[in-house]
Amino acid sequence: MTNTERPGSGDSNGRDGDQLASPLAPYDEPGFFRHLAANTSEGILTIDEDSTIVFANPAIKDVLGYTPDELIGSSKMILIPPRLRDAHAAGLEAYLRTGEKHIDWDGIELPALHKDGHEIPVLVSLREHDENGDSRLFTGLFRDLSARKERERQFEAVFNNTYQFTGLTDVDGTVLEANGAALSFAGLERSEVVGKPLWESYWFQLSDRAKRVAREAVEQARTGAFFRDEVRVQGAERTAIIDFSVRPVTDQNGEAQLLIPEGRDITDLKLREQHLQVIHRLLRHNLRNDLNIVKGFAETLTEELEVDRHREYAAEIDATASRLLDASETAKTLASATFGTAHYQEETKVVPVLERVVDNFSAQNPEVTITLACINVEDPTVLADDRLETAFVELVENAAEHTVNSDPVVTLEVCDHGTDVAVHILDNGPGIPCSEQTGIFNDEPVTQIDHGSGLGLWLVALVIDDYGGSLEYRPRDGGGSRVIVVLPAREDE
Image (cartoon, rainbow, N blue to C red; front, side, top):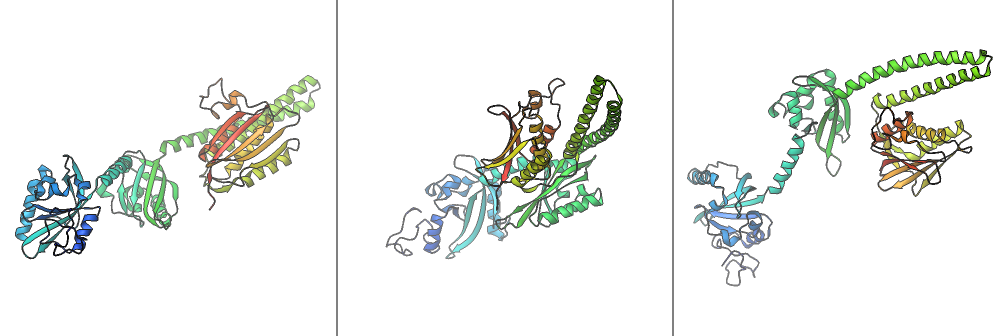
């Protein structure tokens, strides 16, 4: 009888056919084991002390490609790659002679030879059991590891083929893994890092602050919170400023199980930032001083000149100096948004921000009609900071300034945008010139000839991009402009 036949009343161990017969029948465990073996998704093989396969369950075909009938009576060596057969035979012979295991039978990863000739990784758990003292049998549970190995290979490819420093630690901060970029930067081997607390690892020994930041990052992330800061770390040949973060990996209950420290080298970026800050401060300081001097002389000339045409010239000089001073203030805001201290974004209701913008603008500009409306949406939430209000102030002021109509109207509409939220800023002016759109609302390169003269829209584009949003311009039907701000919406809990 084959191993797939059901025993009938003639089976001395059978109970109305609920057992699975096999060539193991004289030695077999009670029917429950055979029934379980026949219906499990794990492959099961039993060999005798001569390495002959005496039992195979149906699931073995899914693992090794052979049906039970093709395996039973064959040597186990048909499942072992040729290069390993001598070692397998020697290992079994040594165990039979001495009783000493040369492998961990509770679970070992081995390559097995599939029926079609390719090797597959399997996890084998092996047990010996004697049957009536007549024969020594070994039953193994085979689990196909191919899918897991492929996921591990893909993970390792991503983990080790990135310029970003990435690691893995236990919740107490003990380093479990570090990727190639982090190890190469420090000139370290994996064994020199794994097992140490993150703050005691080589990278963070540059200063007390670096060690303190690493320790604080672990303490915060282990509670389930995300940590982020900038810190200078040491490498084998240079130091680097990194955008350092530690993110918890949590279970279904929100409890941290692992921590993922990451570091992005921003040394060159910070150096350029410092240079630009110095240039900005010098230009702004000198520009404001010189413009104030020009403005003072222009005001004096306006008061003292007797010829109307000359007074008009002086007034124009005064007005131009005022516009340049305003541009300087906008440049200051732009520099602050770009180079200022870190901005910590949090969940922010959009409508209250817009209401403040509308109220303040209306109070200062009573000649402009400005309204706010929510269309098919109540009060969406986005991830933002105080720069969100600054961005909308700039957009509203831009809309009003470009409106030459005797009855200027600015409308703000909050709309649902799928998984995002959209705010439309509409005016009844002539529209935004093409030069003002370059590099802000499109990807066209900015040139000396084709560029925008105002910094306000650049500030808005910078802030919205930092929020992961987008900025779009469309001419308004019937004349005017429609600027659309799209921001990722946050679900209310």
